[in-house]
Amino acid sequence: MQLSHPQALADDAAELFRLLGDATRIRILQALAASDELCVNEIAEAIGASDTKISQALRLLRTAGVVRNRRDGRHIHYRLDDEHVRTLLTVTHEHLTHRARP
Image 1 (cartoon, helix red, strand yellow):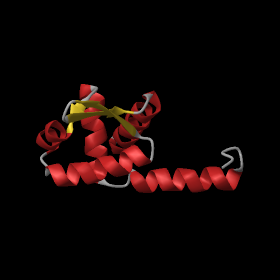
Image 2 (tube, rainbow, N blue to C red):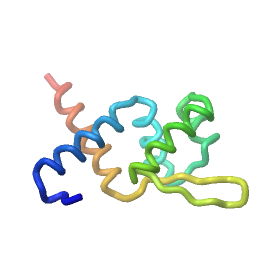
Image 3 (cartoon, rainbow, N blue to C red):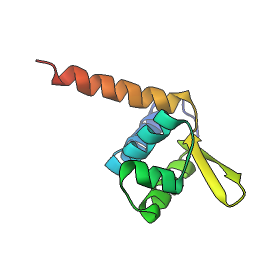
Image 4 (tube, rainbow, N blue to C red):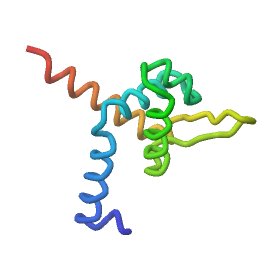
């Protein structure tokens, strides 16, 4: 895939926004941004969702290259893939905060 091609870039961006268009996945990313690295049960506890729901969301996020994981024995720890993901969260928060101002 050529990201320099305008249609390919638009398609990939739309796919990323669809992936991020879920509040649970955004809350997972926010928890990871705040803590650097967490396992499934820690994320579930932090955002008040079931381990199953978190695992399913993490699978999608990992497949899309938004998060990465590290195995430590029986535990799998997740973290943001890179600073670009943190930047997306920050810019989104800034935009929403800016829009909310009178």
